[in-house]
Image (cartoon, rainbow, N blue to C red; front, side, top):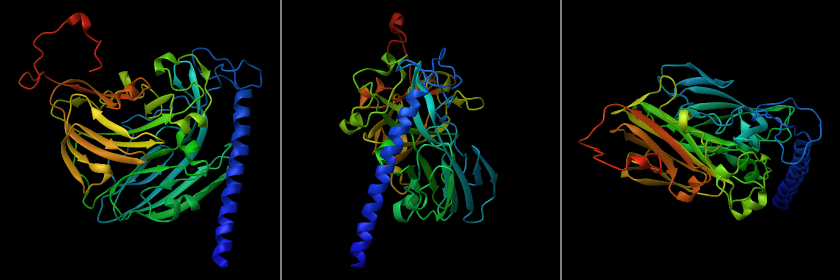
Length: 401
């Protein structure tokens, strides 16, 4: 009888949470639409209650939604993450304690020029901050949900051993802070994400990131490391248009029906199309020049919420793949590696030839939806490896490769 009562109580609790979610989500969407204001060139504007036509640009509250791929801790030896910064590194003599503070930020950001989405984030960017430690470390994790948030949130850490990956003890209402202390028992590259009902809705709004748990003794040294996460965005614009056709649409609304149909409007790296191309491509940040002969490591996750990723760098082979994020399962000389939804991978390679290298999901129509990144490499030509003898120069720039 006791077990029956416990089971009934759990079911009732889940129903109540779902009802709360539905009510709050509906009110939040209505409030967002009512607060829309016209803006020039996508610039943030003052939010006032003036009535505006449906679909006009909203007040922008997150200036840049995409986390730079180079924004990650450069070692597992930092003991504090707070306010967007890793600090207090130590020299290891064994496992350490890591204190990590995440803050929820709900807001509106530009997804493509003149078009906006409502995002929910950890610390104001997508993906959320990377937590990086070593097997045996303890993480003291704090989740703060500001009082102006419209939704409760939590975190399910795939790296955590315990009920819900911690989510059942990190459910955090607006205006509250939760704390959970956990030990990292297994090395690997792990997803984390919000798991408050409805889980797909919270993931589809941007609430996810990676935890890297290095094996004892750490990972081999490389010259450059980057942090990428693939995801899908589902909106009322549907799935028939490429992202370049969706500029100047004002505020698009989240559409769970298209999520159920697995028909995304955008498929992206780090929160939006073109998040890691042009002057934001890997190797372009100040002090981060990639040279011929350098080694590169990519920590790549795929949150889905629906699609797996056929991860490929055009013009490179992966010297080493940490299959499914496991540091004990290596593959070598791989052209394309699969990242399951809710999974991750680590890849390493040496760049031998200068130029720009395109990173894609080789389910290739997804490049139309935004799943493209790039790596910039400088150095002397290597004609013994790659010798472009002649070609039609009038077509330069026309190839996707």
